[in-house]
Length: 161
Image (tube, rainbow, N blue to C red; front, side):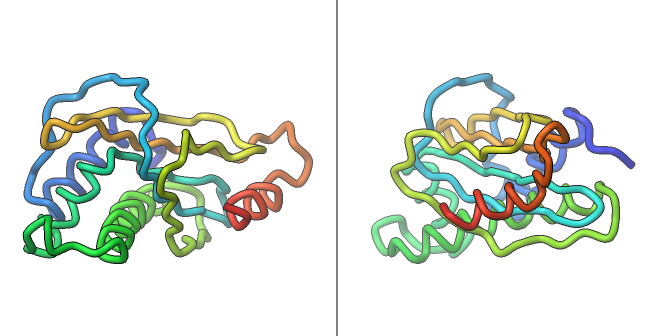
């Protein structure tokens, strides 16, 4: 099977339904820069990255839902772990749809980013949603075949974040 825009949208909706109790609202395109981004890298038969980006408010809402805790009791580590797990779950689903063998990196979480970018990649798919009234974006980037050695370049770019 190959990853399509519709399939990625379904993966995002399924992960939100499973892990945060269906907080997803209708699809809503939004070019807002989102300050919390978690990403995982996929390497092997296919090389790329999956980024899960959201507002700080949504990061807290998702964490509270996942941990069944009030927002005011959350720590920065709790939020980092939960948002990283969202990227991990979406990334794992994307990985299963790509060429095997493939490995999935541990998630990395960036707070206060002004928009994450990964040199040596090109946009494959992007899904924008609102969740609990806040924007969220899942982006799948593929290693750009026009860059020689791009898979190593992507790994170095992601590792340096």
